[in-house]
Amino acid sequence: MTYSVAVAGASGYAGGELLRLLAEHPEFEIRTVTGHSNAGKPLISSQPHLRSLAHLTLQETTPEVLDGHDVVFFALPHGASGALTAQLTDVRLAIDCGADHRLTSESDWAAFYGGEYNEAWAYGVPELIVAGGPGEAATRQRARLASATRIAAPGCNASTVSLSLAPGIAAGVIEPQDIVTVLAVGPSGAGKAAHTHLLGAELMGTANPYAVGGTHRHIPEIQQALRGAGAAANPTLSFTPVLVPMSRGILATSTARITPGTTAADVRAAWETAYADETFVHVLPEGVFPRTADTIGANTCLMGVAIDEAAGRVVVVAAVDNLAKGTAGAAIQSANIALGIPEATGLSVNGVAP
Image (cartoon, rainbow, N blue to C red):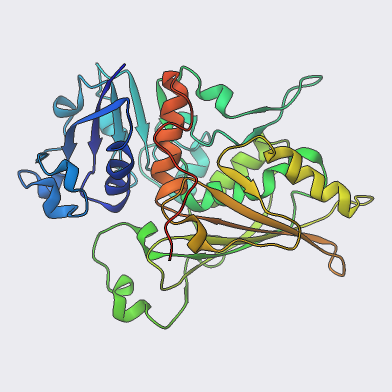
């Protein structure tokens, strides 16, 4: 079966990556692309690398343009998609790559984003562990995506950290308090809008921390995911992202206290067991840690796990391509599940090198 697809925000980085992956998907047909400030222009004027889509012209981003498609992907700035999604009347599946539908807590939205709150949709991280109720086994988020009609794709930093720590939380081998995460991130995660601090001359040869001191908007999203994985108390984490001069990629180093009585074998087993059967999340052999370069263009999260015996902490280093597995790949993977298409369709574990 072929599903008709529209991509809103097709002129941006996330929109471009969605289109690159969708163009090779055997069951999706891209019929409509929108870009408000570029409406009326050929798509390739904004995305010159997408030669197979040269026949498409950017249209206005309106409910009327988007309605009538089987699937609509939203790759819009935060706060821009909620009003549009509320007006859709004839769309089988909508996937929002922005933050508008990620948070279940209205107070968290008010504290970290502000503006009108929109209801939370099914969270688009299929591999994320979801704790069961009393006497119930844990499941995965993919179970909640099956037959979903509205999906919130994750924040790229948030899903990287959540996937890094959820196995330890679910297995009870790490404590949810005093988590520390430092991330090296590429500037494409900030979008395509022009900002002085994102200019090449400002980024090359330097590393720049931002959102320091617990202000980054992905913090409540991580806490929400870790609570869902079984954290007994509200997780507390110190989260510090650092812009580095690579166009794509996230390298997240997360540490957490090991629970008393936990052995090194217990720790290793928690992560290896959690992801043993996953296609797109891979735990590397002991002593091996990922590079961002090995994930570029791939729908993979690669992670290495170590124990700092002196500090009594587990150290998880995870790498993703923020535009692929971090955003567009997660959205398409989730769409596949919702539509009953084999989950890996149109997605690859192979990156691009050098």
